[in-house]
Amino acid sequence: MQKYYILLVAALLFNLPKSKATLLKDSVGVENVSGKKVILHKVVAKDTYYSIGRRYNISPKIIIAYNDNKYLALDVIIKVPTELAFTAAKSTPMAQVSAPDSGTPSASGTIIEHAVKPKENLNRLAETYGTTVNEIKRINELKTINLRIGQILKIPVKEGFTETNGDAVQTPVAVPVAEKVVEKPAERPVEKKVTEKPAATPVKAEQDADFIEHVVGSNETIYSIATRYNLTMDQLKAKNNLKDNSLNVGQHLLIKGQYPAKPVYIPPAANTADPNKSNSDTTGLKNPSLRYAPSRYGLNQMDEKGTAVWITDPDLDPTKMLVLHRTAPIGSVMKITNPMTNRSTFAKVVGKFTENETTKDVIIVMTKAVADALGAIDKRFFCNLTYSGQQENEQ
Image (cartoon, rainbow, N blue to C red; front, side, top):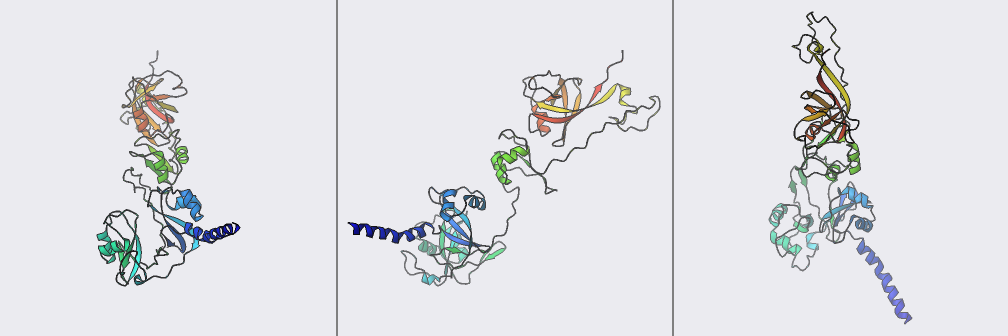
């Protein structure tokens, strides 16, 4: 009985290196990127970034960043970067590679591996690589002409054949089937365009690379916008003082830099000249056609700074430019400026407001239409007011 146990242990020890080698075997193949070995891994059932990282002894965070957090689905090809030096295997003539369950191999040449891209079919591949559809089907044991995106095909290529893609010329490199090595020139950094997503609203033209502002488009979320600009959701919310993840179409979000500070408004000096004397200097007058100071006509310009709040009230139409003020004459039109976005708009005073929990410590109450015109992010925000108030008649 003891002999059987010894034989069983010996068999297990003998098969252990083979099992380990099988587990660490590359899923699809490898690439040469700047002299480093990059593993091509084909996703199978129950694969996660964590399990793939354990398989190749690479941190999952590095794999996620290298693949731009690509969604893992069956047969999707992802790349696993390593610090190992790339060692290219010698090309194997096609005559030396025996196709499984096939007859005599095709004409002399080499075999390359091609990952199927969108809109590609067997006719297009055969024309591109100078072979035939039947030859590709025979080597890959294909029963139909249907292909999947990301599917790896072995394609016979004649010696000296070159493939032209756009303005770049690539020469397929012969690889041994056992190694599944794909030789590829070093990848050049690709500049990401801010308008690469058709659903997104174009970002303002950046005259200054240190300032980026994004206008929220339909179907966009905090997550999609943060991912687009390589930010976290918390960073994007903190930069724009967002309390939750809700967004409005057309809302402006600050991505990089700061909004320019608005110049401090300096009210014009009061005109103390003799009212009976013609005054040619009309600086500071609301209407240059008025030759005297506003006080001559019973008008005065009011400037206020403080906190504003927008509310939803059944008595106020949220689509109209309406405001409530404590002292401004009803019916007057005032200019409202948001210094955070450097936007200004005009609204009509339709009444006064009383202080409650919502309007505590504010100088003006407005409708949602006014707040949107000012680019307000929160319900409460700082603003500047300018309006003309009629002076009280002297008793």
